[in-house]
Length: 234
Image (cartoon, rainbow, N blue to C red; front, side, top):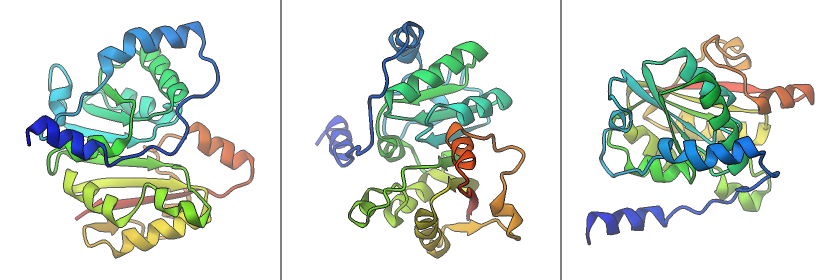
């Protein structure tokens, strides 16, 4: 089997269950998808150092945001940390268009995107290549028969542990109590991760370097409690 065949075999493992299309795009958004997206899109190559996705490759570290929604958090992190290369995976077309608009408006040069399942990037990345991973307000798939669709699983934590360097941080946020319990059960039990919280205040509020997402603001307006978890790769 050739390397490209092997890559295809890996990529076929993933099936996206969420939305891909949303409301009609504006002319500006459609234009960005046609012009800016091809310049920033990743073509994950197995074993490639993710710093090489950026030119020139002068990034200190590379971070990954999984399912960036409208891109509020990703764009702000990229703006605050021009020395960090940030990868973002999001199949939702409208979300991708919103992030591209933010990238264009802020003239960001340290973002690369992938309009497909994040698992494909994770499988392609070499060992110990990421300094931080964000999984913020993922779909909780609340029905029991859909729990297998949840992004956080023991298998996925194994995969994340492989690509995260020692000392790297995994940040997870949710407003769904069921998904919170599910995630804590798996993260606390995983030997590769250590919970950084020392007091309840540390998981009840975001740290200063953790920008708010649009979904988070919406959840708060609806009266839902948001929880913020920070785990370190051992």
